[in-house]
Image (cartoon, rainbow, N blue to C red; front, side, top):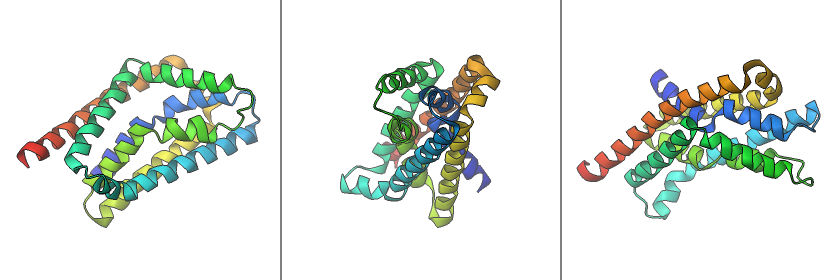
Length: 207
């Protein structure tokens, strides 16, 4: 059970990427007060959690309604996660997030960034949705399902704390440390993504 929790936690942590979201959030909320930044961080994390819980609980039914086999979703999800890992290693994901943040910041009428771009697509993006659905489909029984959901809640709480403390975290670690952490997490995610693809191919052709 501990191994399952750690596997789910690491996967979701790498995909949601709290260390990568924190500096973006700090840049988006420069003009806001401390209370406003805290409220937006809580709201963004809460909305992302609700979205991911919906896909975690009802994602399999959605696949069934669309007549998509689980092994096909494993392969597609694995490839999607591998692409995210590739972008993390070569800093493409950070660059895209920064460009998106600049567009939002350049629009004066946009003040509350909790829904867009923070909750969607930075926290509850396609990669996170694919990851939580894959993890829930891999879990067997109610107990393992709760373990995966517990890992999701833990990652969201850490993300919320990272967003709230985004300013001090940026001053403490700096850009170089954040870039190094992101690259290491990207390599781990690539290995996990490759395993999803292997499992999907094995199930499709040899299951």
